[in-house]
Length: 280
Image (cartoon, rainbow, N blue to C red; front, side):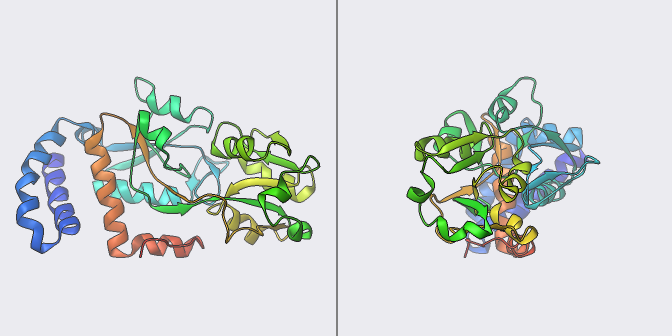
């Protein structure tokens, strides 16, 4: 009962934040219905459990990374913790992977409530799952050795037989490389977090990555460069992924994202991790 009352209070706060004072009356008229529906939905299940379960790959600095001791850090991890905090529950992270992400989200019984950390919002994913509003802008770019930064000025420069392009399996990076670099030598490496060092060491020449990931490696390894960082090949957003049928959870997550945009906490996270804020 206490948790359900807390949920109702949370909805009232969310209504004020999202709708504003002038629209409160019209929004509030739907609040009781929303609360009643959530009492029997996924949010109520999480509240009763007292813990929200997030699936994350843990291999995607600086969005989601798992330390050797099992602790997680990163931009997406902090967003997840904020969702748990504003919901008033504990948080637990479950390991998933890019090749198994979709299957892990859809499996029954569920392995986790939702997935977070570098997951691009796509129409294909929305066909079979739910995705939140975006909380981070992204786009495809490259990492290469700093000594060869002038060599790569376009996709055509990368799409050459002598260029070794390394990607992690099962995600959109591999898909992008296969579709856009038919002449390059594409190498699939199982562990995403190992690829930047392999580029720096000369095992491969180029890593297909995101504008959310590349700055971290450029800042932490002077051997690396991201010459096309300001001219990404694609434009998109990163969001939270979950099963269909969990619309109450989707609304809850979207409310938190909107609140974080409104109160400035999302901007502060961007600044902390050196990422571009695109939500003016």
